[in-house]
Image 1 (cartoon, rainbow, N blue to C red):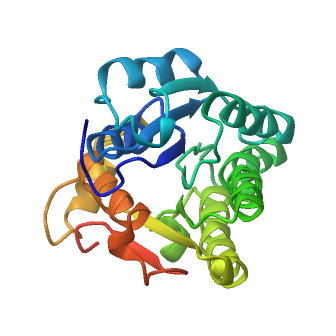
Image 2: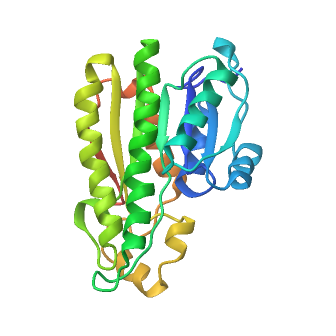
Length: 255
């Protein structure tokens, strides 16, 4: 049996097929949670479970980790995930990490409506749909919980070529704060993480010249490892952060 700061808890992680989502599954499982890795790419989510998680605590009658295909922007897909959790685990998830996200970068004057909508649908609407579905389940079951939404430093400061992305991530911060106010009396905490530049597939698409320019502004003079932000997410998921809600926490090396 694995002991840890989230031992015996059931966690849903979206965007679990790579990057921060995958690292979060790794750390949560190491700390004793049973993890449901959800991603639009089912094979990537399954790979996360197979190679990046450790055996979880079997307390509270929980089965092992699982992978599931999920389109966060589709309410029917989110409801299907919720029903799968209920059926397989006989209990609601009390840790929810909204890590699914996409980019469709372009200059404001050239950005298509389709690219704007696609980013908002996944990054903002998707976080809303998942948070709403699982918060309802926690409230019905009268269980305390922790929801962690992944925003971005771009949602705070903006960035050229990312009007859609910055709008979506700023929305996540505001949505997190409002949800925290609403859900606090039910002992459901909602927080946001604002990562800077991390070694993830999303950042791999950024030109090296741009990366080097950014690193000059980072006091720690490097990009982060996804495991470093996953540790903060796991802290927020645990009772060690029991008096933290509505927060937007920078994890960016001082950028």
